[in-house]
Image 1 (cartoon, rainbow, N blue to C red):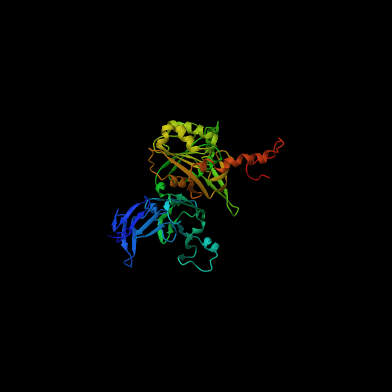
Image 2: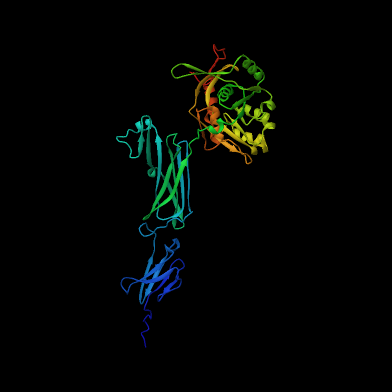
Length: 464
């Protein structure tokens, strides 16, 4: 008769796990897809192999009973023994390159251990001045050089600039990483590579090519007849009238609703063209003469066969002009606020109603130039051109323009300033100028004694 203390097992049995259940007995698994007993190097050594290992298999106790011997152990997560590589599609990356501002946001739903991620940005710049400013002792490995320029290939590593936050997601981590970096304002293309070291493995998270450079080739409109309307009769309208009228295949109408201004402008045109005078860096004055085809206060006549409308007026006059042209808005028309302060796009959509679906609305952050009318309808002085202006664009659901919007406007304005798309229409609506001008005016005139001035004052320059 056998001893009552004898355990009649020639192999161990295993239990525990996430459900504290029997896992394997005498070499027979309760779930062969998950748990299996294998022999070690020594035939008396037995190992429980756990397949499809997941977070539920850790931080719980496992028990091995072999004869009278009982061994218990708990599997704890540690960086050395465990890795959880995110499943495909569970990591999101949002990245952008706008006007030299490079930003990346990464969200990893589940990972173990904490990843060590690297963000690389590669770009090529053509600039002799850039190379000189780099103060390099030797040339980069990848570059070409001629008499006037050098092309430098840069590889920027932003690893140390990445901000990371993590929180528990079950037994693993959920990780957020972000990067914001300001490059040169003219950097508009390059390649981004994001890779992460997770435990012993390095994985590629995303590779992306950026190309947000403005297209300055306007040949698409140079050979296409374009009829535009300029709404307004002030400084900016005068300036735009000259620049647009001198462009090949551009015909310009003017709609000005200020009392008597249309008659005054037409009277001036009978005596000659409209002239812009611009002082050059060497002190010389360059005169550009060109005139609009038609100046009127009649919106119906002004809008005849018009394809592009520029509203060049202060924000408080926008509604007046939008309502005046509303009955004559046709399908696939481009409406431009120059500038588009105070929510120009939203105001247009509200006033145009259903017609906003058939047109494209563009708003600029400022006028492209500084200018002052010297003699109404005859002479305007150009004080300077800006290097860059930013624009926003809202395209109606049923609008199918036959021309490229930004490229077309760029052609009308000329090579300078360069037009770039803003990241959000609010950046135009909340342009600092509309916020700063009132305090500037107050600061200049708060101590005025009310006495007449000896000369007409300038608003924002030459002030003391």
